[in-house]
Length: 355
Image (cartoon, rainbow, N blue to C red; front, side, top):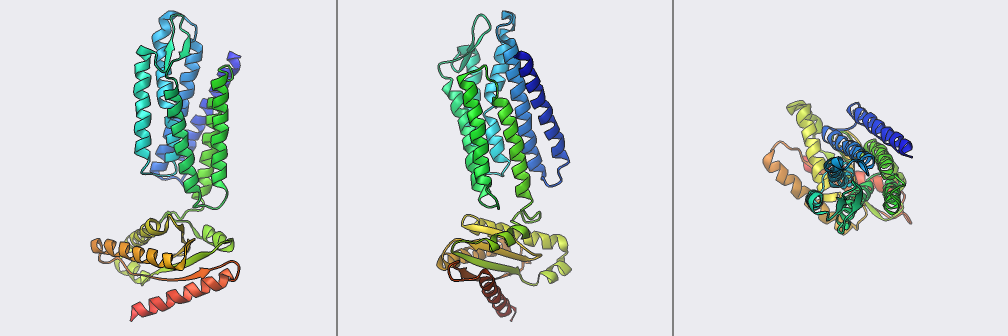
């Protein structure tokens, strides 16, 4: 049994090392995403090796008790951060710091437990046991994976495909394996499940990146075409076009032109992102699909232009943006007609502003 467990541990470590190497060759990931992925796979390597050391030390010479306690402190302290790292791979969130501080409290309890036995203890025969407050570790572990699941499902709504269900399935799979090992410690499958889950997450994340525009980080043309072809409920379709963008590029250079597109995209995502889907489907052309009423869309439009004006106070050469929109009802309208109406309104807006 020990030989099988050692072989499984070695397999997990090798797989995670391969993933660490592959991150460096993934040109689709940005530096921060690579860093987060590296932390995730590094934590898995650290955790699985500490668990293996703990199993090998269990019941051995009493002189090894301090080492046994040390590896358990490391394993139980850092394992909950895996869920947090999974969630962070989807980007930053305002909830990240509160979760991080909660998990840091668990680290403090684990260190104290090496001397008090609150969360775990190693007896005089060098045998590991759960302590009276082992629930503290379980709560920290659950918090990490709750953050991962909630964050993943929230982000997945912006992409094509059932990634939300896939992410929920990954979490349930990992949780089932962890619960199984908690009930029967002889069935050591938790780190194998976590490693498989991390690889699946990496794959999902790669699929999502294929739907993202590299410059603006909005959804790309593929997502735009797929979404408009598959709208099945009432929505407001908005088209945006950066005015005189070619002139901006010719006058101030392409670097400034890229900055303008990124600024417009950030304002767009900030205002519309929580209510619909934002796309860059052409050079200076954007689209938003809002699942809101036309009245609500008008309010968001005012907020969007107010946000642009705030940016223009800092950068006076930021160009204006024309827009048009139309309401779509799948029961009565054709999406092609809705798009044409929105495009015509945008053209009229652009013509009025050019005078």
